[in-house]
Amino acid sequence: MILAVDVGNTNIVLGVIDAEKLITTGRLRTDIYQTEDEYAMKIHSFLSLRNADDIDGAIISSVVPALIGTLKKAIKTVCGIDSIVVGPGVKTGLSIKIDDPAQLGADMVVSAVAAKSKYPCPIIIFDLGTATTGSVLDKDGNFLGGIITAGVKTSINALSTGTALLPQIDITAPKKIIGTNSIESMKSGCVIGTAAMLDGFVDKFQEELGQEATVVVTGGLGKSIAKNCRHNMIIDENLIIDGLREIYYKNK
Image (cartoon, rainbow, N blue to C red; front, side, top):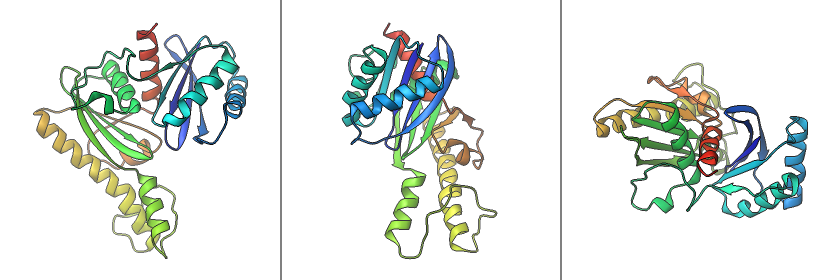
């Protein structure tokens, strides 16, 4: 079995894969101050709870460079194996057409690899996490580029900490678009506003591509936002884990 690790700015997603099948997933809080022993105990507990002790391969994708070494050592301690880390020198099968391919985040690479293998091109991928990213693959599966903007929770945190009267809110759609109190107005701005932004980007991306594209949404907030969009969107919660599986086998 393979342990796939997706390190985001807020959460670390763990996935256990047996051949082509995703067996189980779990989440840890991202904390750069945790030691390799602390992460080793958490990974060991996760695998034990899922009865997934027979790990013979591991792959890591991380947007938090400070944690790569820590997690590699933790996995080595628990599983006795060396991890593949998505980055320069790792085969992905993805042709990246941006100005400097080395700048492209590992999460965007991995999600693009998965989407290319699962869905018809061209493809637009939105990943809604700490940041909201949009990636565009052309009809031949080449990575053309995309957008990066503040994530929904990041925006809410900025509002609640930067203003005296606006509270933290749960990320759910409001009862109606025109809010009649602060909380409903914030929900409308954050949830409906993000959905409208995604719809707008789909229109603009398709205009530049010159054709319609498959639209895929992933990330912790993907489902909450996508169901408020007017465009048809495929919700794929395990897109990055699937991409890590693809890349692992390309490098074995």
